[in-house]
Length: 218
Length: 382
Image 1 (cartoon, chains in turn blue, red):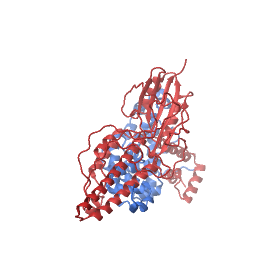
Image 2 (cartoon, one colour):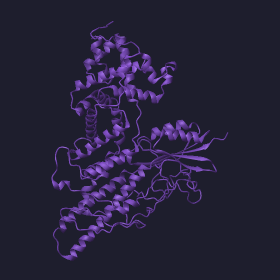
Image 3 (cartoon, chains in turn orange, red):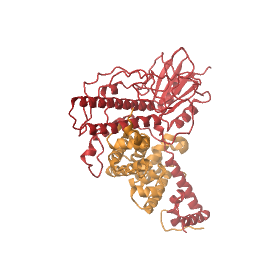
């Protein structure tokens, strides 16, 4: 049984506090317990940003290592989760920039050629898009479209629509101003929309004319 | 406002991030312009497609690889500065090699048949059954004088039965020490073991031997506990036309964390064990139930929130750390041989307690990691 000398102060600490303290002193198991509830989420962020498991594993590990090495600077003035994801998201972005060469199908190229070729990649036209593409195929196509975005756009898409950050939080985390967040998300969504329409994953509906400056008001 | 102006705001409009003035202008425009209204619909679908991408599983090797890299770093040195030497010293209790080798998988369900078909899940209390492991190296605890040195105290391989050797937990929280014989779900491949059958269904809440209160509170978790500190077993039973095909389906869906474990030739029951965690268990259960169809019956779930035990074990380690520091200061520079012997003995006792706490933590981790969904499939009578 612990002796009385140390007893009083210890009882008031929360489990997270205890784990953070031990992790700071190099208790790897304590750190692993601390991050265990974030492991899957961080891995998924890395996966959606890199598009494949090999890179996702590397990027996620680098992110966690950076969190670990940053522990001495964690003062507990924000929640651990907030602090962790700030480091993780920035680490992922840094890693992406390092890996400029990625395994991505250049959708911009393929969509410019004969439409039939694009469709053939993903579906047999005679089936009709809805039947031909089952869920797995659909998700793969969406992921590939995301990969076709530049990393700055990809990151904000993931942060907003997979991690649920507000515009302010994204701006704060990445150290950019909120106007930049707005315009990046806007362009990312429009680009994704155009890609998905060309892949016949979205109905075409009415498409804006490519020429900007044309007004259309009823 | 014209379409160009509105078009640049549509993303923020969908995300609810427009200023009140902008919102008003966009809404006014959308009422009159079906072009932009259609664009909003398309963007909404884009967001929906992105947001609904499935979560992928973390590869099995990830955790181990990260662990190795963390261990190689040692204490975190910070990204910007190197802390002073006194902060850098490793201050942790090493888990003695023998005890580490002897940690046995513990789980909540007694998958072993006991007492010939007794109804309900048997959760037995008792000493941890320790497998024989390598003998501990001959090491002697040394006095901790500055600078502190990490040593390994010899630890008995067989913890004493009864509660003397184990520090008593705070009243009301039972010690998770059970001895079971459970299959290891992560081996891969089929393990036919006809003497191990899944636990029969039945109420277990009133089992006087139960170490945990078996009550399933859906969606109610104490503020402090994390999903990854909950250990559970859910059991589903179903009669299907083709058990082998259903097992195959489940194995494919949960590739990497599922295993077919038992074939009881008499009743032709296929058991599929799926590793799960509390955060995603409800999703898994929903999927499996919908796959199994009408004839699925759900057994009494076993669920235990181990956050309190985790906390106790870490608090114990924390207290022991403080104690050790106190002792090392108090004994610095003593020369009297009798006092030296006393101090050595004190330190050895603390080492043993710390080793026990580490063992408990390791067992807790194993218990949580063994959270599973058991699916028992039998053939539907034609």
